Image 1: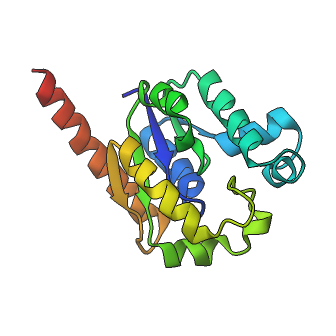
Image 2 (image 1 turned 90 degrees about the vertical axis):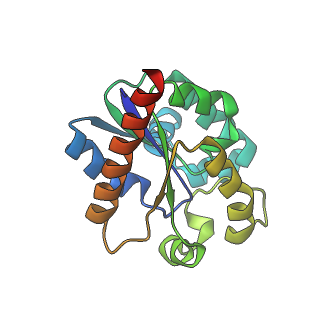
Amino acid sequence: MTSVVLIGMPGAGKSTVGVLLAKALGFDFIDTDLLIQLREHRTLQEILDSDGYQHLRAIEAEVLLALEPDGMVIATGGSAVYSERAMRHLKAHGPAVFLDVPLDVLRRRVGDLGCRGIAGPPGSTFESLAAERIPLYRRYADIVVDADLPNADAVVERVRALLTSHLRNKAGQRS
């Protein structure tokens, strides 16, 4: 395992958990939403407002494909799973971990969709995006983590335990 890829809905805690997980594993941390904003010199919401959600998704795929992750925990944007090519690229460097959080908890954490830079068709609801994305997260996930825990440290410990188990199982399958 050279990297760990965190996937999930906005508000799942990918960035928060990612920083702590990187520290625990001795890895670097990268947040792909920040990479997009640095590349474009504007916020995700500004990209959405001026160019639309499809353009933001295309930029996201380009940014993900340009990564050569080694020794990293990567917090992806919630729409990363729309690019099969980008997900294959990331998963070639390490397991994808889906941080699964109940919709009502996510909704509370996210608040106003119009300010978060969430890439979806105009008029989308958080619920409709979840219905579309959750099957994709499950499809790409090597590990699914119930991340509805009291705090980020507890989520990190659960992720670490499941990563250890996953890697043991992979090693057993090769021998």
